[in-house]
Image (cartoon, rainbow, N blue to C red):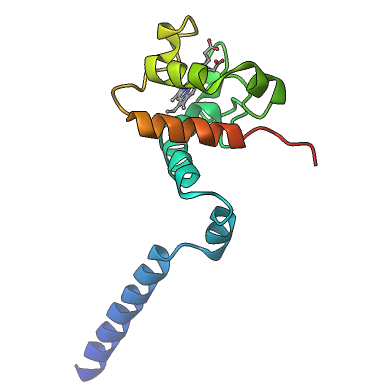
Amino acid sequence: MKRSFMMAMALISMAGCSKKAREAPPAAVAAEAAPLSYELRLGRETYRHYCMICHGEGGAGDGFNAFNLDPHPRDYSDPAFQKKKTDAELADAIRRGGAGVGLSALMPPWGHTLSDAQISQVVLYIRTLEHKPE
Ligand code: HEC
């Protein structure tokens, strides 16, 4: 009786430990986030939550959903694309969606979901996805 009580206590405290471990960010993520400003990290959160599924983690237009999209989203890592579009044009496409700016309606409008600040942050983040030659 006493022994099984001890076992149960040990199990409970082990469960407590593993929960703590899960809440702490892994060291690699913390290190990767370090060079990004607070604004960019907010932009990255928004991007990962809403956009990555279609646009891909690195913005190459190769998200999980992209096979389903015709046309595919543009490649944000392409410096030629980045040069061609102003921040205002990107923000406008995000706010009004593809249908609002003469692009494919498969790009949803985000103006009701995201605040202006969130849209500016995500535009800033999209700018960091440009592939820089080493
Ligand atoms: C359901 C899939 C999907 C999601 C989710 C999505 N997009 Fe798109 N997006 C597209 C597609 C497809 C296009 C290409 C439209 C075209 O070129 O005709 C596009 C185009 C764009 C463009 C215009 C690029 C250009 O060529 O001018 C921007 C900017 C953009 N997306 C940003 C975002 C952002 C930011 C998010 C998240 C808030 C997001 N998208 C979420 C599918 C998606």
